Length: 375
Image (cartoon, rainbow, N blue to C red; front, side, top):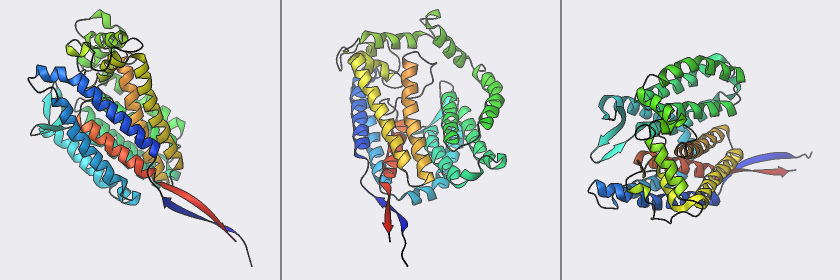
């Protein structure tokens, strides 16, 4: 008796080379512009010109080492410890509310010595992996309201804990990424519509309950109405981008970072970059982020299981969405959000978690299936 059957086997290969190259380019370019945009602020603080750059380098090295470890951990082990990561993230989110340092009305940072850590950054990764796990296990039951309510409550909990840290932008970001994962998992449209209708009144109340949020909307709609106040930052950011022209003033030759552009090395570093490399440089940087997304989504489509699929999709969407949102804020296309530019903005928590995410994505790129037909 003879016949044929298909044997499906999972294999491992080296990491996606193009994605590695894109990450290296983004990280290298980001560090170069971080030094260029941060040294004036370092000098104003009576620090060495390399102060912010060296701090970022230290975190980048830690992040790369962490990513290298993650790349070589079997996905099943990562999946096994997702719940522990969620618990740690939850505890840190509570911890920051109790002992976190209050900076300009926001309790987002845990200070340890000369270093600070922002728990909401690790929450992004924890929530993506948690949803990847539960969506992969409950995929065929997601249109059951009871089953769907469990992950929704976790999303609401983490978003609320982030919101009470006075980090409205990151809270909305967590909701957006979660909604994107629910969407690709096949949750019915009526649940999205019901959620939007139910949440809209609360979001409007929250949005207009704090003066600084209202000011951000005013600055977005009409920055010239208060050019020395709420509109100052976005006006100066636009000035920096426009002054760069097509070719830019040259790397290191920007002038707006010397005092007129606030946060030139952090949330608004893109404006400083635009001044120095102009339209052509901005185009190339955006192209790199688009290529990152393309490779990330290709990895997503090639994943060998549903957990990996959702994890790869969530990580790719998270990093790409952050980059687009930051650029949109700096160019005045959307209201200010406080979301950093991945690989570029100064901030240890953000770059460290971004590199860990890249490590997981590169890990997922190593797995593929082969099919063998035997008679």
